[in-house]
Each structure stands twice: as C-alpha cells, then as structure tokens.
Length: 493
Image 1: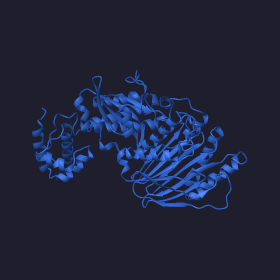
Image 2: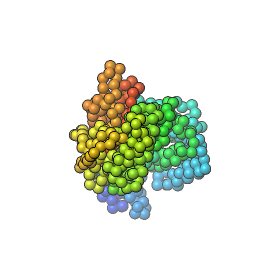
Image 3: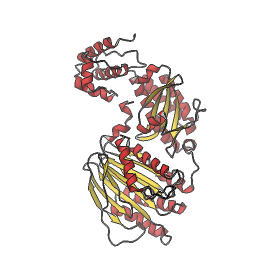
Image 4: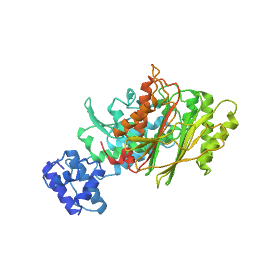
C-alpha cells in the first residue's frame, strides 16, 4: 500500500467511521486513549475536512477506528498514512514476549540482555537496557552485546532521564540513529529506560510499534525485579557507590519504593542511599485499605540499623496478625524496650491506615514530625494529632488522630533528617523549604515518585551531597487519577 495523501486518508477514515457506526464522541475517547492530543472539536473538524492533523495524529485516529472495528469484527478498515510495521498483528509482540520468557527461564540475571536481544529481533529493532542507580541520579547501561561501550547518563539532564522522570516515551534522532527512549516499569515502580533503535525515523510515531514496545518494556521490568534476587549482577549495575553494612541491612528489608492500586499511590525515598542507617518504611495495600508506617531509629550506625530492622519486623508481624494502629506501634515499642532497653536506642514513627472507599485516614505519630497534607498542590495543614512519646519509652496514655481526605490529597511523611539538614553555612533546610519544594514539584505535574525524588535531590544539593542524618520521604496519595501518570498503556509521548 502506497502512502496516502492527507485528504484521501481523512476521507477513508471518515468512511470507516461511518461504516462502523462509531460516533465522533466515542471515537475521540478511543483516540485519546491511544495517545491522541487533538481535542474533540479539532477531531470533528478534521473528520469534516475543516482542519488537518499531523501524520502521527491521523494514524492514531485510524488506530482508534480500527480497534473499534476489531471489536465488531468489521471489514471496512481505516487507512494509515503509510504501511505500519505490524498494524493489527499481535503475533510479533507475542513472539517477543515468549522469547523473553524462554530466555530467562532457569537463567541467571546475567543472561537478561541476551533474552532482550532475542525479543527485540521479533519486532525488528535493537535495544540497550539502562537501570536507575540506587541514588536515582544515573541511568546505568546493563552489560550486553549492544551496551558494552555505553556510559551512564544523568537522570536530571538527559532525554533518557526525561523518559524516566515523566514515564513518557521520548522519540528522537541522534547521530543519524532513530530511537525511542522507553521507560521500564515494574507495575508503577520505575526501573530504568530502554533504548529502542529503529531503522526508519517514520517508525518513531508508529502507534502500533509504541504499543509493542510498551509491552516488552513493562514485562522486562517485572523480569528485572524477579531475577534480581537470583544473583548480584543487577545489584552491581545499580550500585554506583560503596554501601555501608547498615544500609545493606535496610535495603534488604524495604518493599518496592513505589506501589499502587486503582485507588491509591504510594512512593518513598531514602537518602543517603549508600549509607542510610536507621530509617525504614513499609506498607500493605488491599482493595479497601492502605496501611503504612515509617520508623526512624535514633542514631546513624549499625545499631540504629538493627533497631530499625527489629522495629520493622515487629510492625509487620502486628499488621499481618490483623492488629490496629495502636497495637502496631505498641509492638514496635515493646520490642525495642525489650531488646534495646538501657542502650539509649529509641525510635519515632508514623503509622497510618487509609480507608480507600471513604478517604478516612487514621494515624498515630509517636515522637515524629507531624505529616503534612498536600491538597490541590498546596500544603494546607499538618496532621498533628495522634501523639505519643518515643517508641521505647513507656507512656500512660495515647490517642489516634483522624483526617478526612479529599480525592487527590497527598499525605507527606518525612523524617527529621530533612528539615534538620544544614548547608555549609549551617542553615537548616527547614520545613518551609520542604513545603516549597513539594508544592513546586506538584505544580510541574510530576508523577508521584518524581515528586519524592525531586525533594530528596533538592536536599542533597542543599548539603552538597553529604547528609549527616538519614532523610526519608514517603508520599501517600488517595486518587483514581494519579495512576494515569504512571500508566504505560496510554502511549503518550
């Protein structure tokens, strides 16, 4: 099929739309879902010949019509502006996924690049995988046949870094090579980026190819996480600084730093990544509740790491036995008092339980800075109820706090290492600077994990990369819309 003129493509698309009995409103919804950027009025004007659209957007209109036709088993199809690589054909994508599965079955993580090469060959492109380092500063190439001579790239200042930060494909042509930088996700956890090199620059905006690449990169993210526990190769790629023993202990206990369901998103960060000692966090998500906790043990050494680890184990044990917030905190308190009593080892913490159907947040804050409530891009209050003394100290009374969240609200939990961080002139980072940084990041439309990363990067700059205390930030968002910023199926670029 030869490439069509824009006018002829529009006429045939309109014919296919009418034949499929697809209303313009429904077509626009389908078109938007596959990455269309024109508004409803612009789409209507295009279909009626009053407005032209770029080729990539015309092809997304055609893709939306054809997906509707596929669902109806229709025969009159809308034409693309040129032949797509595999329009409507899922065989190549399935073959690629099978190659990834076969190549990683009974295989150490070292063989992941070879499996990825085999998968990419089914789709007609070449790839190099980059993983984000633990400090979230660099994208590091995974050793393989195509990435052996590559060097790390900074997340904050490069186009691949932008793909990672905003979870959006970034097509480009550099040094004569057409490529698409695709985010790699495990669920909603950002893993790295995939350098997808194609032969024809026209493929950069092929919606079918984008969908196939998303399938591969998303499945690849799951495989990276699954294979990481089988060997040290993936860890060696991500570990760009020597790690202390206490940090090794803490990282072995942490859950994925970002997680979510259709009703809630949660994202956390710890710094210094290679030397964190006494801060930990954990969570449990269900269809109706999000339970979470942050524990900050006193000190910044191996003893603090051991206390944090024991406290986290006590919290998980109490939570998994179905105990409530007060009992969860008391379990941490009793455990620390029993095993570290007399050693001046205590802990502060935040324990929360968010009802995902109603937005009711119940929380308990033993000796910890009060969480902040971010609403519509502004911090509107501190959640300063539910107080108790340090965990490890006996108290005579305590009470839980409660807050009714609105849709989209973000609960900001932070440890004292953030406001108490000081620069070379002994100026504190402070709570006001923390609030300003969070509000600016939210105003920029950054995804939730990028907000937390931005805050910790700002903190590191304040202290010139050297922190004297652990700094942890955990964001919990009650939302059904924030997930779109971390959804690889939307095909937005």
